[in-house]
Length: 346
Ligand code: SF4
Image (tube, rainbow, N blue to C red; front, side, top):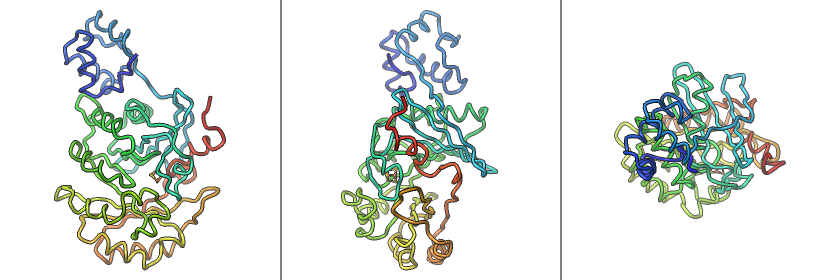
């Protein structure tokens, strides 16, 4: 049995053709699922009854089962979902006055092993399917009574470019006009820097790119991000300089401020120097400590000073608010909490 939500347009057309239907039937079903939010083939009334039966015999339409839902004092909401095989993933809804954003996961755990990250510490279990990626957005959209979701950030659990094939299929569904019709310009993908996959992704989707940098020398970055041994800083910078990102757009560099490790004034100056010549902005993320963490949170003074130095060098610098701190909304923390004690919920 095929999960209909795993099908991107190319696979979907092939699938309906294999059942003797014309390609447009796939797009009809897509509209029922993603636009009208009907998840039962029986109820897709503009499709002849015989075809509906055929679809039902050969495919199903999956949905996510909620495991827990927590609302923060700042109104961000954390959803954790129980997958069919007992794993838990999480997504976050972040409202703001003018725009709302959904942050989604792409893997259960992560194999990149960044030493400051709770998800990294829990190791890797498996990739999410295209359906599981898309279903996070659908669930939250339904839960918020179809409230407009302006932005999608792919910054939850996992390294998205390490699950490239399923990520791309899900993006084809998310951006398709018969799917969720979300423009790639409203999607931001954060990566630790799996360099060969970046141009490949941008060739098909002009999404916004965020690179999780966190240090400005190889020596420092090697200490906290094993991926740097394969794709070192100089190669990241070279690639970013060569990327055709368009005149009005900029690459975001994320920098998790780890108290006493990379939050000194000299670190800020080195970072500014490193990024010169790249159309970029810097997103400083204040490290959100957790039990057993090897780093401490930075002092308020160092955060401000770091920002001032980069701003004085001409960069746009934002400090990511620790939204949802009271509900463990930082990267991977809620699911990690469950998985730490029990690899699967059964
Ligand atoms: Fe994976 Fe991102 Fe955590 Fe690194 S920071 S371990 S890439 S989830």
